[in-house]
Length: 243
Image 1 (spheres, rainbow, N blue to C red):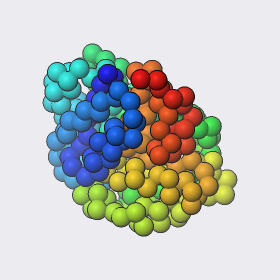
Image 2: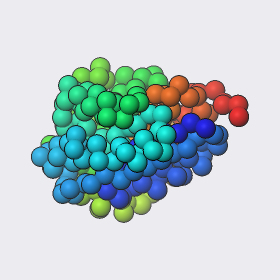
Image 3: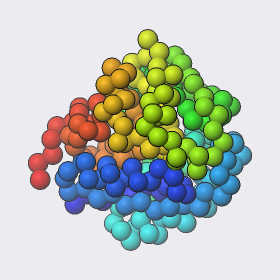
Image 4: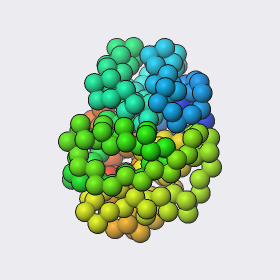
């Protein structure tokens, strides 16, 4: 059994995680601990506070007792708002506290884009434009060429968590660009896992979503290789795990 640990802010799109655990279809356990979100606002100061060391450390005892072999801060905006260096510091602090390899959803996007062979990407963000542009800067620091950014201007994660399949699909379509080799949807409050097959069918290219890449990143940290086609192109590039 491989135990994956996730620190998830508040309650919005967290039901994507048990869905992914089921679709992985192997001896993988997904353990989720909710952190205090503080003020639910897609605003830079609130997002920086949400990802502060104190808030992240508060959830670690439970994940350690569960035997997590890797820990991922399951929040994109709460990591990239610190910038590339600040997000690295955040992950280093998390790894020190956890005593196991650690990462965040922001770094997961960079690694996942490389995995699917995408250097030119388009971003469909639920965030206000100011926050979305910080994600664009983060991806640029990762060596990616962001060819298009669409911002929906949603202020709270709670609202994002209510979005339907049609709204998610509309965001992905609006973000897509002819030169983009993948489309990125960076909010972990957004339910996307059930929609991945449709998203990739409609766009005809890899679609990377926050909760999807977060779980993939934890698997990468534990050197697990899982083939789960219903989780999109990212999970079709790995050989089947024999159990």
